[in-house]
Image 1 (cartoon, rainbow, N blue to C red):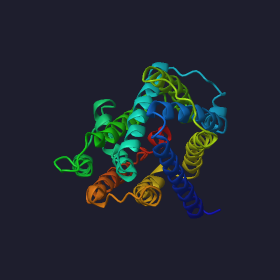
Image 2: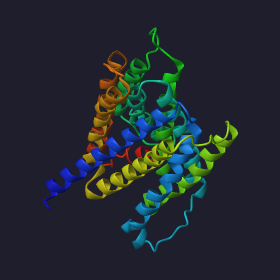
Image 3: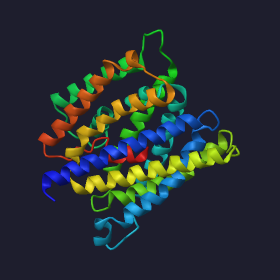
Image 4: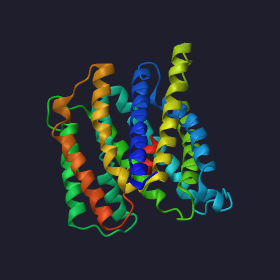
Length: 308
């Protein structure tokens, strides 16, 4: 297969991952009427351990490194698990309370928060272009959230909190030694998130009895779709540079709008535009600058998407 063909195939697989993540989110929204966000997060993480283990086993870097399971910065890996636990809690809560497309779109602002955390935690030097992107994206987030509008609800801040935490999980992953495969970091974080989300569910009301076989199948489908989406992302990242895939991640916004309208009759056009356009522009500005500097444009794509 030619290089261009390989890139095209990787892009197609990454778009499939976006659709699968959206379907997972749609099921979460559907189940939110009967089950709490901590419960759904726990189920998602339990099913997420399996694809994370598969991704690790299929990692050539892990095999070349002697299949080691020890990580020197275990505290950072465990911290990621805690961060992911609360990010999922906020995102899943938002899916049950506001329009699907609105909640999903706001989480795509993670790139601008990643830039801020890269400065604060990694001590990266950020120039005018990326700070301008942060400003543009922040304005876009405020517009989508709807501060000052009669339709504003505090629940709209939940996906903002999720975006901040997903970005933080992405940046903290870069504190781990470079020779540690990302799949191993993700496996440990997911396993720790199982514990964290399970404890949250226990202390915030416990686990509800699964009401029917239909609900059980929906829960299995939710976990299966999320896990398959993670594997699709892993496959696509191995086929080409992440900077080739990053711009296409924003196709998730129109996908979310279409699916929200199709399955729930939601069409929050006034809430999304033009704020969503500014969020996309800011993300593309960050990606372009990262690529121009010769860095991997992984800002809030590789880890944060898998953490959903």
